[in-house]
Amino acid sequence: MPTQRPYRVDSSNTDATIRSSRAPALSPTGSVPEAGHWRFRMIAPAFPAFNIYSRIARKTTALGPLIVATSVSHMPGWHVEMIDENNYRQLGPKDRMGRPDHTTLQAIRRVGIVGLYGGLSSTIPRLYELARFYKRQGVITIAGGQHFMGENVREALENGIDFVVAGEGEDTIQELLTAIQEQRNPEEVSGLAFLRSGHIVRTPDRPPITDFSSRPFPNFDLIRYAKVDICPLSWIRGCGMNCEFCTVKGRPRPAPVGRIVEQIASLVETRNARCFFIVDDLFGQRRQDTLRLCRMLADYQEAIGIKLDLTVQIRLDRAKDTELLQAMRAARINTVCIGFESPIPEELEVMNKTMRPEDMLELTRLYHKAGFLVHGMFIFGYPLREGMAPLSSEERVRHFRRFIRKARLDTIQVLLPVPLPGTELTERLAREGRIFPKDIVGWEYYDGNFPLFKPDEPLTAEEMHAAIRKINGRFYRFRYMFVVGLNVLAFPAMIFSVFNLSVGWHRWYRSWRNALIRFGGWIIVRKWTAAFKRSTFPQRMAQAKERLQSRRGQASRPPVRADAPETR
Ligand code: B12
Ligand code: SF4
Image (cartoon, rainbow, N blue to C red):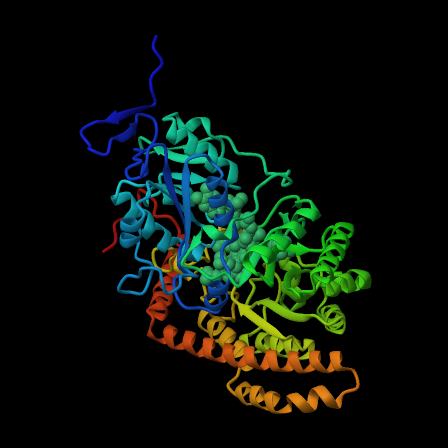
């Protein structure tokens, strides 16, 4: 019996559309600009609204999609570009709303296949909008990222996505594109989901990558219309901890230490890069390797006579390791981002964070003493387990303010809990029927700035929302504009009045930098509050609460017996 070809060519279409009897319609229209050349565009979709991350996103880029784009660019015959909608500068064509204009982008360089980054749930509505736009043009759409798990996979496949890639995408994308090119059945490719006759086909999972030694470095030149001032780098994937609210799971998998130094050196040499953000969630989790990395980085900077500026995410308990902190400082890791999460012991316990607030203060002091700038990340209003006594909004706000003041943090972010896809927190809240229905409060609100579920009584969703504005608003204030001015005036006195020039400079710089950020933060909080007041969110929240209430009412009502008399 002859084997069935998975694809047939639809010759009624002048652009020769390839159709599959087993998989989505595949149309490489426009992907053959010259014989043998295919075009691929990777897109990181825009954040839904201006928020506290908009500024930083404009200076950096999303690493995951860049790694995937780089992987495609190493395939023979492929032309690749990446558009980061959150870092999109003057030369990029824009639509009437000021967003990247994909019609013009297609007119300039027509691609046949797009990749869409779904790492942040808040960008999913924009991702679907883009997917539908490209699909209308006959472009094949592929999406990946941490949002796509569970029922979100079907949602994606019904919203303009042809293929959803699960987990790490750098190998899957190469195999999938090759299958498309060679008109082979995508079912042969591991780590995929797609629709066939309305049913989801899932291919076997792909094992996590463990060998990073021979993989290409992310190629920042692929990103068009962007200016990347802070280069993201990844050293260790996965996290050995198990925080209830977090999606980052799995055994830590490091790249060789030398590769990180080599990558930094290459970015310094080719892009004149100075600022780096190591995106790993737990820097320092492999102590010996971290010490080695820091020493190599320190030696490298000394050898080239250039000082770099590195930021890492690290746990508080690493502060006990004096040798590690010294090595990190010598490597010019200037800023540490720390997930304090909460100063309330019960909340820390539920999150699976094994810390006591009093120890947290002491450990923060050690980071400061070692000369780090400390960025504190907090979650306000974390839901407790049954039987635990919840606090009122005022009490919680007091706890947070007191802790932030005592810890003398340089910068803070206080967000609300987000029931992210695939976390234990989401499971717990869903079981308790507390998550606001998605048709009312959609993914665009999943950025940590909006209440997304019914909080523990006596706290209300409105109070929860007002609380983060109060805490952030107390920290980021207008008056810091004057402090910036005072610092400028005090500059010569500060530098020359102290005995040690280096200590004087650091003290002055820290005070000036923090005042500047706190004033900038005031502008962001104000802008964000104004946008919130214009938004429909309060009405949505009221509607969502009503829906939850009526569902609860239905659930608690005794079932109507079949033989019960009819009531009027
Ligand atoms: C850097 C970072 C940021 C940066 C983002 C910078 C930018 N321009 O995008 C900043 C600081 C702005 C940020 C902000 C927030 N973040 Co953040 N962030 C991260 C972090 C630490 C690293 C991301 C990264 O580079 N990973 C490394 C790369 C290699 O992995 P990857 O992105 O998953 O990509 C791989 C695969 O997913 C896949 N893939 C990805 N895209 C595609 C596309 C295609 C086509 C294919 C084939 C494959 C593919 O292949 C990639 C390579 O293997 C992650 C945690 C983590 N470890 O991932 C959290 C994370 C992404 N953030 C998260 C969250 C929740 C937030 C915030 C809401 C704050 C908060 N409450 O924690 C805000 C949201 C901002 C907003 N406006 O919505 C969550 C997202 C979960 C979700 N479903 O939304 C994560 C996963 C952390 C967590 N708590 O669980 N974040
Ligand atoms: S919050 Fe940080 S420490 Fe906790 S599991 Fe996520 S990445 Fe690991």
